Image (cartoon, rainbow, N blue to C red):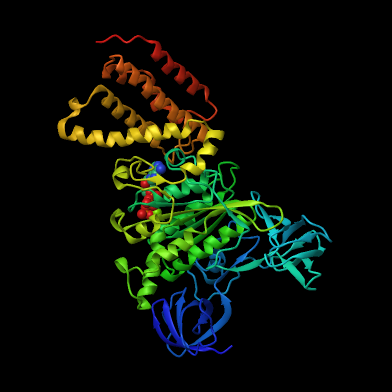
Length: 587
Ligand SMILES: Nc1ncnc2c1ncn2[C@@H]1O[C@H](COP(=O)(O)OP(=O)(O)OP(=O)(O)O)[C@@H](O)[C@H]1O
Ligand SMILES: [Mg+2]
């Protein structure tokens, strides 16, 4: 193919002439250093190229070589445990080749070409297969079995397949299509363009919650498996901790974590911390079921732009195996800023705050790749991909264009507040501003698996917290004396909900995770006591009496009750029940 020539270099944007043969979104190698770039705009023979590496030192006159392929990822065994940059270059391999910092134009395959994987067929010679069928498995890590799938466009009879050790590029099977006469060699590795979503047989409604063990999330604002959620929050309010907690505890098989850090140390934290996180269920390193995409501060902004696509395509691939996958993007604001920078250099018409007009479309395209789907293949397996993105608007301002555009797409909003973080109320998720639109889809699951009255109690509890907010306003204006005893009780119960239920310490071994059953019991006890006290007040009990109930002490400590000590909840309930029987005398 004809080579192009660089005309101009402007930061991550390179303009080249002689590019009449390339296509939009084609990957090109730019300059003597052969930097990775992608064609963003074409005008006759002039191409605007987004370059994913530092462009200093390259200049006009140097050549641009088309590769004929769109920006793609390699999919196959070896993904789990890997740490990649935004264009799926393995960071540890790059570091080995080029020393500590990442040298430019380094060509390293994303999946190890030498490594042997033990392939065990699950079909045999003569079996008929269709696109998406699983033909064999590889134990990729001690935690995850990698399923080898037939590409969607292939079908026919298996004409060759054998158990053995193979590299990702070896042929593990052959499919013969008698109609077309075509023979297709099946390899464990597939390449797939990142800007297009991977197809599935059917999109299904989400019906199961992602259980994260975080009480404010699971009980108050749950996200469905296959849903999309957003975590906006100001600097230091706990976005990363929430995403780490979900990665660690959520009931999913696979985690894809995309770190788009702005500050160098932020990403270093992820790179240093993540590999040390333990999978609580198996006590093995969490990284054995994780793919990490990291943008460190010495990478140009454009690499952040591609990283969310690289990440989500990998996530979809595991979904297609029938796994439940959770993808975290931390933070999408850094991604949007990259988009803004490139758009500015392309001299596009700026929209709100300088972001391009297509910001919302791009965000929608990203979040819409979440879902619960029936995968291709004859076994009807179901996979889910849940997408959780944090947003860091300047000053925590929710009118920020990225927050606003995200709000229009996602169905769950966990709004972090710095006021709560300052008060050390963690997770600093506001119970007044946050919401979930999955309640209707999840009612059946909670009724069946937890309790019939789960959402009824949740509604009552949320209502109390809202009442608290308006009562506090009255207290501020005219003092607590203005409140009736029943209103005082609302404040007491709301405080208990906040401190004994919503407040949860990520770093306390007993408090870091709460099963959904225990969450229910905790909420149930607080609400039970509330209702009993309400009756006592109706019968004339004084507020002091309500405040001095001994069971309050126990409620304050119930978050530390071990999952195996459910008996303690029974005892507390009995204790509250006996209050009902006590005759209250008016003091
Ligand atoms: N659930 C929690 N339990 C205990 N401490 C927490 C919790 N969440 C956050 N913190 C505290 O708040 C600090 C900041 O949290 P985190 O790094 O997640 O904020 P962030 O919103 O990601 O910040 P940035 O905007 O810098 O990325 C943590 O280091 C920790 O001390
Ligand atoms: Mg953070």
